[in-house]
Length: 183
Image (tube, rainbow, N blue to C red; front, top):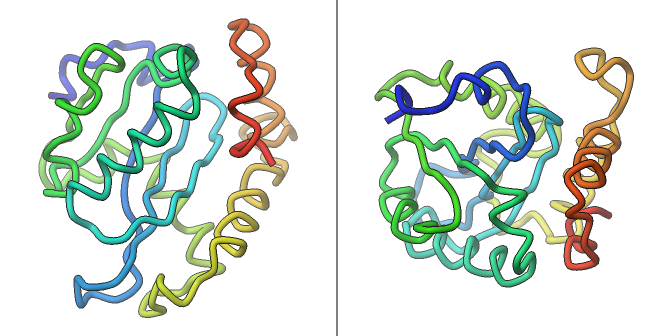
């Protein structure tokens, strides 16, 4: 439960605490979705296109991320906060021993305020109702890159990527395995 989440996560004073959600294009339930993750301190965004909103697709994407980041994963992803959607029902088991997992209260989207705000950026490029299957992986990557390079007032004019990289260097966890996500 979110009540167990450390105060430092709420205040964004420590690096490595993420929010996770999905972006759906069509409500049909049959389309691909975007799995989105944002690091709370830096606002760095990861956007992964997955085959559906089912839990198995979320787990598969996270397993790929774990494999690609290797030993750095638990240092980069110290905690992940999700809503109570069925797509996150296996999150705790998937990340057991790697990351702390917290779940928000039902109907309390403000408990993941960073994620909700980031989705507004995504919706500038992919309006509601557009099937995610029609959005290319290249376009998803361009959206992620645009979001991460955009200078932000809340970050004193720095981009999310700049702050994220500084945190990786400070934590001594900058890794070539992150290259795919840093472009």
